[in-house]
Amino acid sequence: MTNEAVVIEQEVQRWLAEAVVGLGLCPFAARPLQDERVVIDVSHAINAESLVDDLHQALCRLEETPVEKLETSLLVVPNMLQDFYDYNDFLDIADAVLQEGGWEGEIQIASFHPEYQFAGTEKTDPENFTNRAPYPIFHLLREDSLEQAIASHPDPEGIPERNIAKLCEMEGDALKSLFPYCFK
Image 1 (cartoon, helix red, strand yellow):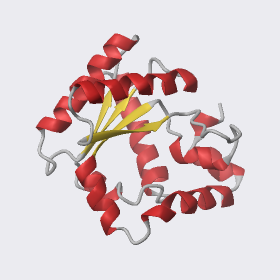
Image 2: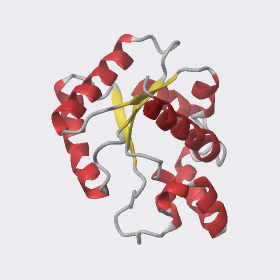
Image 3: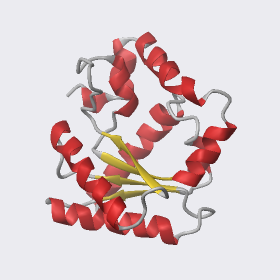
C-alpha cells in the first residue's frame, strides 16, 4: 500500500471512529469495526472505467468472503468525483454494476461525499453532515446484515431525525473539528 493510500485509510478510519461511531450516526457500525470485519479499499482510479473495475472487485470480494470475516466494505475514491454532482451521477453507474452483477437485493450502496447535499437543503445545513466523509465513498452493505441490524434496533425510523438533531445542536467549531475537510 502506498504512503498516500495509508494516509487516506487513516483519515477514513478517523471519520468512522469519531463521526460515524463517535456521534452514533450509524448505530450499526461499531460492532463490525470492533470485530475488524470492515475493509477500506482505496481506489486509484482516475476514470470511470477503472472505477467500475474497482467497484466490481470490491463487490466480488464482499460476495465471496463469509460475513464472519467481512461484513462491509468502503470503496474510497480520492482521485476523482470531487464534484458532488459528478459523484451523484456516478451512483447510477454503480447501481447498474449492482444490477448487472446480480447483487441487487443482496448488496446495497450507501453514499458519502465531502460535499454531500440532500435535495431541498442548503449546502451548509447540518443534516448534510450525516453523509459527509473525507473523500467520495461507496459503502457496500450486505442487505441481510442490514435487515438484522435494523430489526434489533428499538427505533430505526428515528435514526435520521436523531442524527439531524444532534448535528444541529453542535457548535460550528465542533463540526469543523469532526469534519475539517468540509471547511477548506
